[in-house]
Image 1 (cartoon, rainbow, N blue to C red):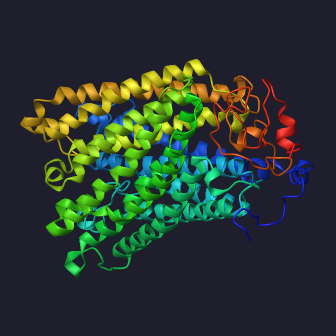
Image 2: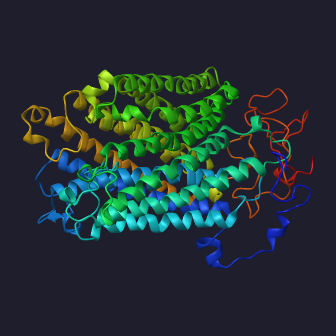
Image 3: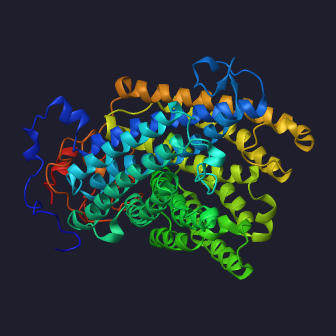
Length: 599
């Protein structure tokens, strides 16, 4: 089978016609759907739910840091680990910190990046009717749902939710001496283990689909950068998740079967957990950020009305980042007492990985340079991503240096860094992607004015929240402190915690504006045509939203995905389905493009 071949020979047939008379039941349409677009919407709603939970926990953490010992509004509805009157207890504070990181990374950002955009875009952007394995695709979602609710249910078991941090460092996470009962920690482990099967199922599907189901003429270097990023990310998922699964099983048996993989009293090695977790964990960082690179490349090229600067370099940079991500995990362990020569090796490889990241940043700037810039909301979010990712990347260089990392390790400098990369980075890219492909999901446009207000408010308050944390870290404020006022040197700078907390509440308020815009636009937003952004890639040659099967006939691809400002076009874009010499008029009829009749 050729690289651009199919799982079955559907190129010569109008395969979407097979689906037009298919009228599945409500359950098969909206619940147990095998349509990749519906599964993308299901992942979207699930992820936004856990994003709300993670944000709520973050607000509670900030309340405790700003006003320790003071009752929190609404405290009566919280679990029994709250003291009377809504005062947060230390045990519950540890659980909040643990579950905030877990929800945000594993149940919000990761499924948003991979589950939502992977499902929505891969078949549409390669000209396929669906995923290679639709039922496996459905299973990947329905494995994620019970995993998420198992994690959520741990708040209500005896002893409360896991409290050993989202990294679950041993021996704290393995020993009842510190955790009392481990049922909450066991649910944490079992939940992530089940979620791993969901991720692996999705990755297998994405890789198979991209390799085997591309449209005629869609060579590897005609793929949009979103597909490249999701394809490489899927390879990372396929290789990294089994490592985490093995570590989770070992830790679970330490708690339930009496093994001592990570318990020194029985001859175990706590550092083994750190090696296994971070050997998974650093590729995981790029699982969270590589899809953002593809999304941002798409919206910046569209907003600048220019081809992506250095397309081939961008592809090679994505591949290089994925490869180098496997050999830098030790920089998380500079404080573990590793051999200085080994530490120096990890320090060098970590600094080297900044090179392909910098290539991408300069190529984005090159794409914007002298472009005919249209400041639509997706572009604003994309530019916001680039600026905040630069800050996160620069702070990462500090931590790559072992002597510097020894001073700032486990301080709020690290908290600032990870949030600039994963919130300022991933979430701004997610906002860009949702606003850009909203028409393909729901057939309508989000309100552009509300999106611009949300962008401005989020960008401002985000920096007010997280940039001062760099200074707190340099002042010595450690992570996971329950009450900073107990330390004289931190009590002097407590006003910064109060300032950050009020800024965080303002940040949360702007997210409710976005939620209103999202829900309102689903039903009342301006109806979108097939190509409201005048973009080039294959999904914009389908209807909005696309029908079951996506395309009437298999599209034929003649050109790359970023041919903006082409001299062949009377406008400033050319769809990938436009044959050489074709000139697109001011208002092209989408039907011949969708049906592929000119081919």
